Length: 349
Ligand code: SF4
Image 1 (cartoon, rainbow, N blue to C red):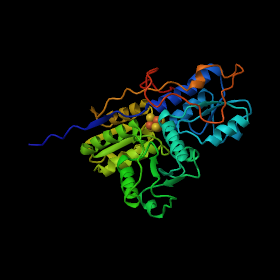
Image 2: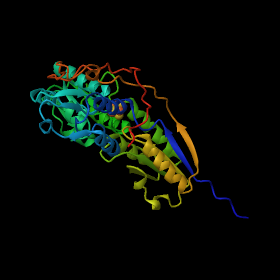
Image 3: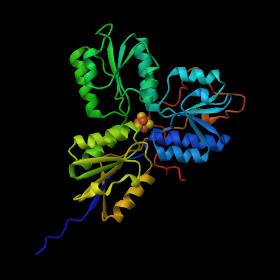
Image 4: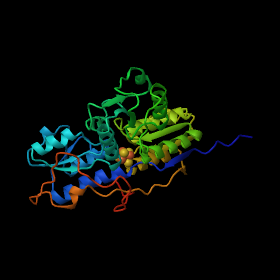
């Protein structure tokens, strides 16, 4: 008698995809376009997702890397990753009306950096060199901040006073790898101070917990996200470290290589904090067409956090009250503010 083949299935992570900070940033661009018309200049990708950026471009957003690429007097949106104070100063110098879409959880890390620098600490910032968020945070106190890009960097760190050293981190790192680095720092600097609360944000942590759960059963884990999305790349690494035989990062269904599915009965599917669910839906359709008919949601946390839109969108930027500043806008408190849903639909083309 033939043994029946096991049914092919998909384990769908929950939570996955857009976080409150990404939702707020994308909504901010859409609201600015609606309120002021095109073009709205955006410094850096508003969030690290190709689909989102292309969709907003079609609506009239123009993405630039530097403020000197923006015509004087224009409206400039700052991305969710945050910027150094020097960028606010440059924008003010060009008479740009800035809207700051920095995620409030990134702003929280900026404030910690400023506070510890004012208290004369040396700050060890755990993060990835060159990442936009790290550049922005480092710019808050360039003379006091040293980047630590993993445990191998720890040996060569020099500080002024070993009793006044604190660590902070980028919001989108691997939780486990960061703790390895922190342990190495504590061995080197036994009096190391820790930040008052986790810098790795709730969304990063929740998505990593969920992908670990998928890795327990899935032979292949697919993470929908763009290559420059730090949290998405970390999720692939976390899946592999948690024992998934294979894990791949894909921008969308077109990125799937059919050979990955050879002998695979269970596919785990999730997405990074900047990837809209419409892309996950496309992957699910693709998998259904390829015999993965059963879809089971694997829920590891509830998310209900939302953030208010940037304060600059609450008044008319062109009414003779330009909001440009020489420093970041105070913005909302880092805590949740229930003014709009974080589970809205992504921009549609
Ligand atoms: Fe904010 Fe975290 Fe989302 Fe980054 S991943 S935008 S820090 S909520």
